[in-house]
Length: 153
Length: 153
Image (cartoon, rainbow over all chains, first blue to last red; front, side, top):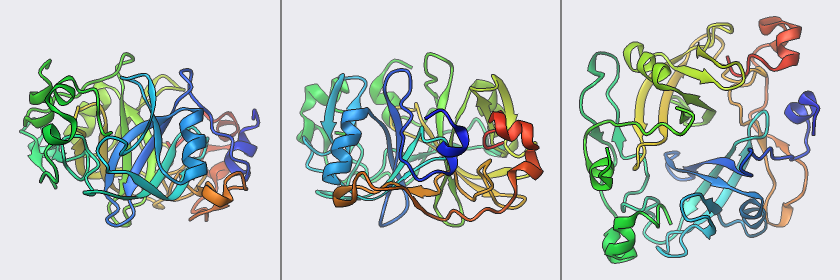
């Protein structure tokens, strides 16, 4: 789809994957509105997500398709999916299953630390909704957790 | 910062810019929680955002630093900034100034179309909070709008 007006104003879904065949995906909670995580879909992950209503992603570190929750049991049911103006980013709103924790560290969200700015710029990170809902070692095992091979899975 | 545990569990802000020196930034509304836009900061854009409390980005299409709202008047005051587990993505919550429209198309959010999924997969995009708050041609001029050189500015 080359026409900018059609891409921005049209009703045809024509996702613009990047040079690596990926689309950034913002994931928020249908219950709280909090941003839970940020990940990428390739064409197949998007197709499976659209078909099943369950979030699938492409892992850049593991070079593989994954269904969120396949290891941890904390899957994502898609409530709404939106595309942005130029169709190169997706925003999905989800309901978590399992413990409700999205992050591989056991927290609800991957965004569990605030960055001080303005007068407080340069100060230390502050916890924000940082309570753990599960023990990462118990779920992923020490080795995987240490290697970081199961990020947000 | 090489230590994964320190990066994930520590209180030192150590943003992990990608190979292009960029950090993806998710922007949500402090009033409604809606995702407004998605953009990138380089080191300088992040430094200015932290110092001033006003969102600055790096434009990949124009290859330049920009302060959101410098053309449109629709700037962003940062209310909260969070980093994710491995510190390679930021989430900022903002209050919009001006008309309150974030998208260069004149909408509040860049995410003004829903993508049908599940049984409805493959159907047409549906408008979602798609009312325009300003006329892009009047704000950016026909040429700039047509060339797409002022995305979300």
